[in-house]
Length: 592
Image (cartoon, rainbow, N blue to C red; front, side, top):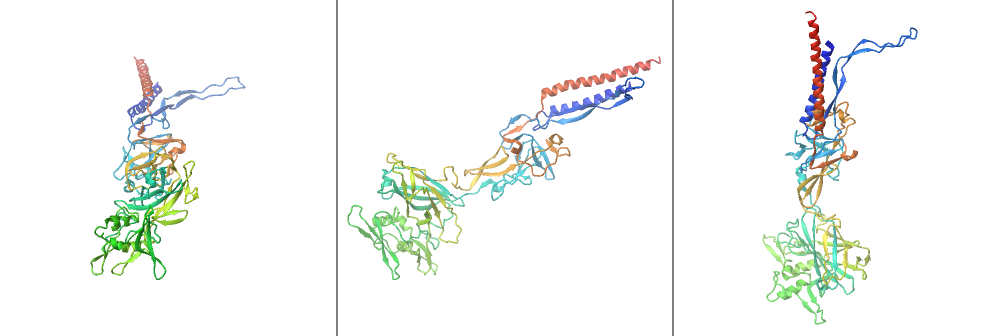
């Protein structure tokens, strides 16, 4: 009878443990990433009063089974349903993430690794991704600073909002394309000045520039001439020591002029430059321009000495001739021409003004002139058009050919299937670092069709997929986490940057992990070790979803059913004790 009492007590204790497990499950029904537990009962032990015996062939006596009396019950195991996923809760927070699959997030407090399914993260003051509940750093991999690709090495804290990640570096434009239609009846294309087209692009530092192209028709159908007319710097250009134009203009604060060097200058249609030969046999521009009457009338000569004063200003009544003189160089006004004067410092601390005519002579010949102090002033070697390996200065042209039957683009400079030319700006100093990159300008998408006398052709940076467009410095506008755990920053310049990747840990026996509280687990001898590197979540078919959390996998209907059976089991074990007590009472009463 005493054994039944202890069996009842063991039953009560074991059912109490089961109640503790059930109560903990129900308490954590809304805990993020919680994995429910269940208990397995096992027999405690047995007292053998008679051992088993085998059959006796000599006596013919049969064998006897052992006689054993059980002494109660005990908890055999408490299992965790680690591999059973919980339901999904939408939060809308980009830093709330959940894992699908059997992997775990790797987190650290600086002294070791822990593991969790709780993906409720935030970014701390240092820009680190961390657990909201504990402040432990989320571990992962960072990109290579040179290639930008993720390096899967020993995990480290993900400082995704570091100072360098808050901005996106500028990029120089490397690709561009002309799109749209050239209508051969367009009056702009047929004019002497041609159809103007502007092309904006970036240098390595994110400063903007605007290249001005002119497109003109020729006497041959399907043949057009594209000319680089000028390049203007942006408002915040690194070349701000120059005037607005990189090619034409003067610098009033130094001893260099940003004009393009021209050994053999081709003027616009209707003008020609007059050259003489010096003592060495070199061709020298004498400053005069011959204007040819397009109607076959008398040609006339424009002499800068008749138009300009020694200080570069226009003489009274010569404004019209000054505009005409400027037009020969593709300038719209004599005011642009007057920008070709430069203030030079003198040895006595004053300044002297070099006239436009002197600058023009230097511009069109040797690219340099001597100022009043005997200092040599070098001119800026401007942009170049590079076609099939040949370079020409700004102002020269490339020939475009279109199919007369289909109107599609054929090639450049008479070369079939040559669909692009290279546009490059180079500094005057060959040893100086060039902030510009060569821009491949593709014309293959342009067409030569009837469009009601309107041409829509225009250049734009980037190829058809937007690659090589270049950009200015960008400021971060948002962060997103992809299904493979890669974290990208989005910037207002249209760029994205890979900031890092969340690493995960897999275990041979995930149920062998030990719960340490705060939604954390740690590795044990029976779970398998963490190698310190981790794996890509997609390596076993899992994924990471952003904006959602994994909720508890507790099933309340199951837990309440277990409550009923546990209550009845506890009740039954208490009856064992009550009945056993009654029997003891009857035994004591025998004495009476």
